[in-house]
Image: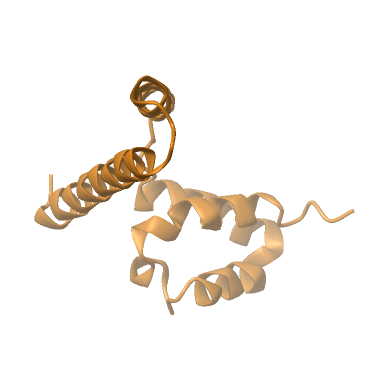
Length: 111
């Protein structure tokens, strides 16, 4: 695993801890009984764990965009890459991959 990927994972974990601490602080500041606040936090954490995030790889995005380009949507693919902050696919931040795939799905599906 690359160092950058490890750092991005660490940042994501730190943000999750910060969000949980904020939830605890909010619950303590409110008039909510402690048991209800704890139950709310436990439900939130359980819901997050049930939905594992699949890491979208550059290769996955490249394959989808290449297929769309072969289907005649090359200009739209280039526009999509530019909209997400790059002049080429490798310039794009990996956090944008999911949004790019969703936008690429609708290319050619105009109603």
